[in-house]
Amino acid sequence: MNEFQIENDRLVGDNQPPFIIAEIGNNHNGDIKIAFELIKKAKEIGVDAVKFQIKDIESSFSKELLDSPYLKSNSFGKTYREHKEALEFSKEELISIYDYAKKLDIICFSTPFDIKSVDLLEELGNPIYKISSFHVTDLKLIERICATKKPMIISSGMSTIEELDTAMDLIKKNSSNFVLLHCISSYPTDDEDVNLHIIPTLKNRYDCIVGYSGHERGIALSVASIALGARVIERHFTLDRTMKGPDHASSIEVSGMRQIIERSQRMFKALGTSEKKVFDCELDNRKKFRGY
Image (cartoon, rainbow, N blue to C red; front, side, top):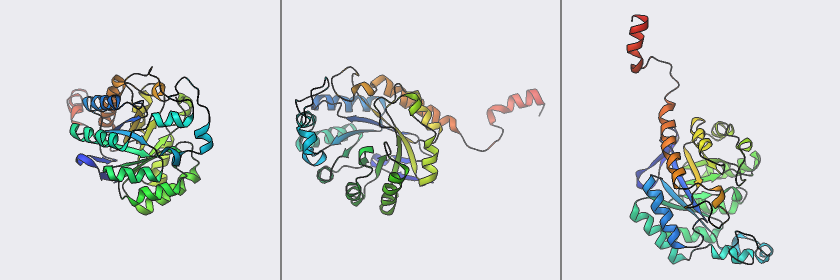
């Protein structure tokens, strides 16, 4: 049985209730007040953890990309560098975010985009590391994260099975406390591309806890992933899908996240076991219609 413990004595595992992550990512729009409100709302509806993205801009992206114009409706700057810088928090702001989450007793962790960001997160006491789909082939970053000896969650989007094999081999050599998320890196993802059938394939291939990082419209498919073996669900989380920003439109609001939590718990409870037996709730009708 695959299982491990994280902060707040919360267990993540094959036989544990779904672990729900509200991916705040960039949906704070660089405003710490919005970040606090997202954490507060997540706690109120019963989310297990909130997650942010941390980047050293110059290390994470090429100079050519950073210098390029970024004049789009969801841009926060004239160049890609200005856009990204506007969405990053300072170390002091990150400390206050982690402290606020701790005060509310909700797990807070991050996705580092580069090794400098891992070093910063270690200073913050980051309890879990998320490896994004973008970084499945960044073996140096994965090695640095492995060296922290913290639990890991890795997404599998836009990766071949060979690329995933290489990343998983590295992780499994260093840790048994990890989760692999099925993910399609398309925002939003069309239903015909969601490919939930890969979830049991990933579980069997890597013998690990699996989950689902969804970018589809609505909530039904995220809940359905539980039936196929997902025990972690990650969805982008926003206060308002119409807000300016690159990820809001493919995110879910508070009411949708609440429904994912409630319906995922119901789905998990309904799974039962693989044993065929007569349940206690059937005994009266068995007696009535069969006489025994």
